[in-house]
Length: 275
Image (spheres, rainbow, N blue to C red):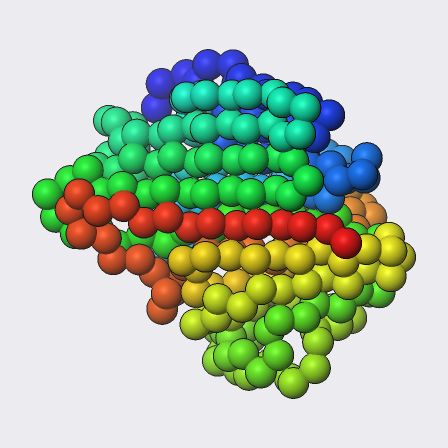
């Protein structure tokens, strides 16, 4: 793969966007950070940034073909082209694009175009558009891997997934059903909830706020926190970082993967608000 150029940053009082990975690094509401960024996050060419909202494409989790291609696809590590940026009084708006080339086709053979449109204002609004530029159908997984900052993960609750079915990645991907009450956290979780487009809410009594996560054209919600022991496997997570984030990811993975016809475009949308 060719050496990567220095990333472009779009910064404002509302937040920060990095062209590497089309990464939403920070978003603020009422001067408070809504997204979590690890203290040891690496801002280096070719490296994924730990925190914010990475773009996961075209596979989720470990390389499904076990060819050493890296977890969560390649989009989050690659330089995207900034198509437009506007820092306004009410919102910062950015559009970025990633189009297949020799380096991507060496990893994944399809012709595609990704476009991420972001608005960082009173609400955070994202739209990930995937276009099939080839002459055959392509199947892919995708996710907006959102890290939300919380006061203490042990003192929050997550509503919106009551009774939903999920696969437990910490228990050999066994299929299970969530309880009929809001999720609370007392240990590690890595769960893929399928067939749900329901909005979720993180109620955070420590920070005194509720984060509402709404999505469109997304049937998977992934909930992740590695907890104390699990966090030690990640060199870019600080010792206490695990207690201050919860990933609630919006995507289409596993059974919900997208099959896209030639010339077609699929659009995944996410909106986050704070009350």
